[in-house]
Image (tube, rainbow over all chains, first blue to last red; front, side, top):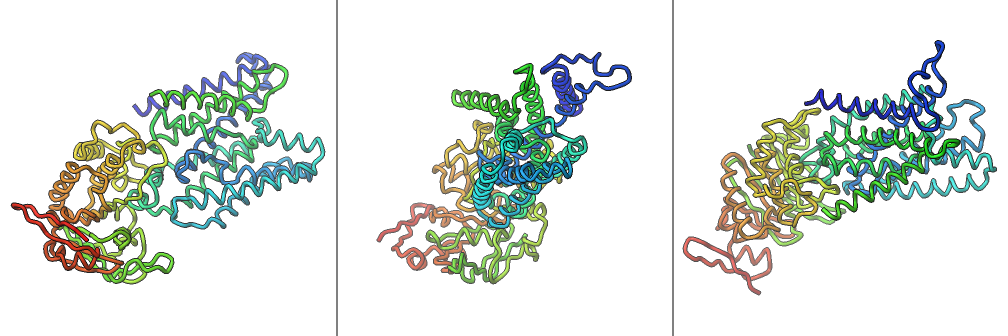
Length: 319
Length: 253
């Protein structure tokens, strides 16, 4: 059964990847991929985009699933703890101060630093009480709001070009990635999945509250620390790579729970796979809607994901 | 197995809730912990399970502090059922009962045939077969309580600490659970908190009566549950009624 399952996963991902490279915008059949001893540039760009979408979608979905369990809140998502605000401030500063002139990695680095700054602030202020993560959730929302207002200030003093740059970054852009950044994000994802699989039983227990976690899964305070840091690093990595892509981390874990249950031993892998494939398809769609220009992928994830999620909600209501 | 709490003392934010209460739970005995609301019963259980650290006194499980053990090892010996138990997500009853197998699985382990067998047996014992696939957080209070009890049974620990396992159960299920616990205690020691003093009188081997964080009486059930001790603990007059071989307690003011 097991090797069969992995084979099925491999086939699904490859099929979507193939589809994503061939269609969307112009038609790129396999015979034009490699011409006269050189890879076709459009093919390479699309391949990169699709692999970025796979990595980011998977990271966001896993991060969201962990956050929802650890904070015991179905509305939690990767950016609940102020990571979007922090990274937004970092990226906006990099764009406004024109740090791109120094190195092309300026925006990703600043976004990553901003996200980690917000996370540290949350963890420092909220402390590690045994209250089921409520103080962390509250601290995260407040820190996010503060960073949001700083971001608004930066936007208010930016000129038009800079404003457009920040806005595009905030909507999420899968093309910006450098191959080395993508590789490091993918390695982080695999490492995080391995650690989380080791803690899957503990995650199940933590979903039932602190006292239940003590009995069925070890010290809840320690667990929350480790899990929040892992999930936040995953989210911060995606932000550095492609800006803020909303909704995947909120919607995909819920949809996957509907289909395969809440046991994290299965849920995390299923969420990674579904999140990755979902974002690849959204990317494809963002290129296919208009032939000339592309939609920001964040617009697609929210529109498609929201509709899909409403349908799932409605269906549950009937059942 | 021998779980000993010696002169346990604990305060929440400088408000003392337990003062020098001692207790021993051994294999083969069913001890019931009774007392008024807020007398420190749940805190006592949390201290014994290691979830809270006592300010003074100490807890030993076969001679070692349960807090010093790795959690899997501790949870294979000592199970703790809390009242505060509410999943934020749609875990099914079966997934909930499977929590009890966590301490028996390795770090990367998945439940095997033996785990499934134990879980199914626990589901059967708690009469949850018909609702095994339903989400726990959409069950009634009593059903949810039975699901949690099934998880603790599936844990197969040598010592069970149960915080009001019968509080939401109907009469038949409460009776069934107390009979079940009496058979279970052959292989393990059980300490349970309850407000059902009649149950304590009929089923418990030993009873610890506490009030305002202090021990009022500790010993055999009919030595502890007397009108004098009960009045001291609850501030109500009590009378023990005997009908055939059954006894019950009636309170009046």
